[in-house]
Image 1 (cartoon, rainbow, N blue to C red):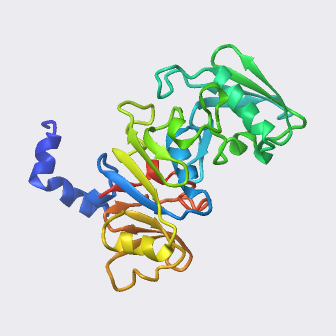
Image 2: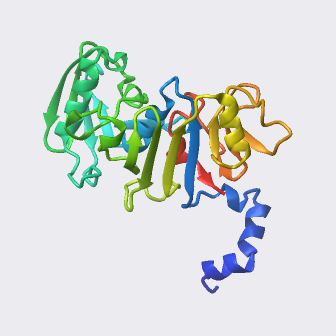
Image 3: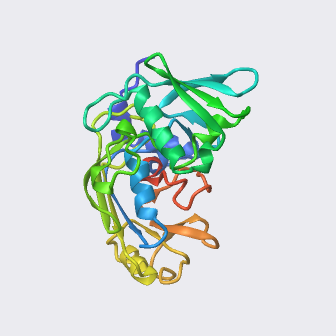
Length: 285
């Protein structure tokens, strides 16, 4: 049997017919391209959280299907008491300034979070460098849920532990690098050319996040096509003015998006912006 020519398959429309027969549309297949324009309110810190989630990585993440996965960590294991943990780190990762990720960056970042009283690190007794690619966690008492704790949004890893950098000066290992930003007003970033998540996340070429204080004005901006997604408390102002997707639902919504924005079939409801990972998990049809 001759090998199928994928280019010819898609050109002939046979691929669309095949996907339709299996209940999947071309729009449901993640694709690279486009700029995500997102309007957020001034209050609540959404601009900063979404921007930081795009620029920085964490050690672990909870995927939309609820499974725990490594991000900057490739694996972890504990002793029988779950008090001592060894977390192995990726070796193919660099910060946006080109410097490689080091275990010392991880330790400095987590110590910075702990020094600010972050409850997600409550019970952390010590962090120790183990070789060049691993960190040992020592807890006050056993905690089998530590890898899940490390996935909580906000425990980002920054170069030299600078986890409180301003939006314009953030240097992370994430999918997007800062182009320009102003705290409390706007943020623009561009997709990195190469990233360890290529093929699995980060579908937009660029991000534009803008603060619009008035919810009615955010709805108008979405309705008139000036933004693609808007943080909205209700669908008022959108009904009867076009078709939109709502997240988590129309009755209990945090976001509204144009029909050209595709959400994964499985999506996290832990955070108002898909656990603040909308920038890497959603895509344009």
